Image (cartoon, rainbow, N blue to C red):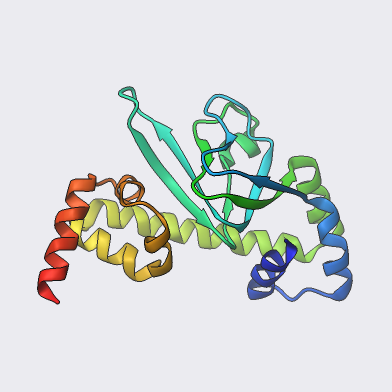
Amino acid sequence: MFDILFKHLQKKVELTARDREHIPAFFEPKKIRRRQFLLNEGDYCRKLNFVSKGIIKSYALDEKGQEHISLLAWEGWWASDFSSFICEEKAKLSIEAIEDSELLLISKINYEKLLIEVPIMERYFRILYQNSLVTKDRRLLSSNAYNAEEKYIEFIEMYPSIAQRVPQTLIASYLGLTPETISRIKKNINRED
């Protein structure tokens, strides 16, 4: 279960043998079934979740009960309601498994200990947060400046294997589109081929 985590860490920082021995003690492995919740809106997010296997989503519901996906996370990705985790406030997001999934969870106490006891992890999380800000900026630009077809094409080009694993309705929600719009775009793309 830790192989994916170590591969992900090694892409960003250089781990020593001691780091590799020490890191697992801070995490709690967890398996969840498809449609099982890790977090419900209104609860407190007490753990950061690393996906070792499967796909999870984080989302908010509007007043009509419509789901708005903020994140799709698969192998090698982290997911949580970070505001709730850091600020110890009620979660504004729910987190649910799209597929049967295997996760590594780290509590806030263990997160803080990890940063102190394995100093390279401080650098790792800094890099992770920087990349996350870049991704959010790109997503905001895409949301505001791209038309529906451009949004969909960008998603498919960036995450081709995930587009095969995630239902079209969830991709539509993530992109702020309707499933019908995605169907129309796919038909147009297929006609052009």
